[in-house]
Image 1 (spheres, rainbow, N blue to C red):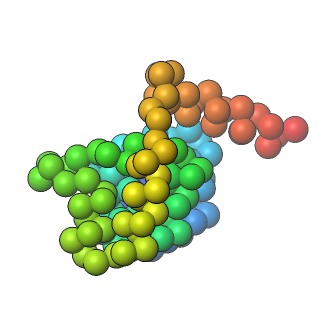
Image 2: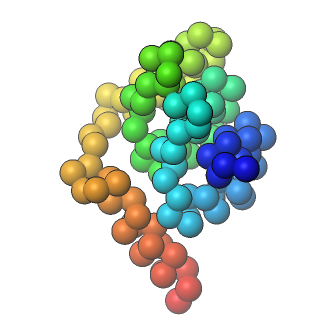
Length: 119
């Protein structure tokens, strides 16, 4: 089974332990599934406020990815009437600044966190 599909399945169930493990293992939290949907798309469509917060605050994911139908996570949240998610995404989008580092510098940050956790 593809790790991305597995990841999205766990996000739907809001298993934060698994989500945290994915993030701390230097996994790219912006991976896409066969429809080019990210975990943020799925969490937004399902209305999982806590997961959306985790992805944008802890993982600093891009809030503007488009899936194969050209929808963003914001589009998904609006379509399904998840107003709390829409508000969170709007605030994050207003302050979002993509990093100049490759992969947003996430891999280096995650490796450092992992090393700190071993000490």
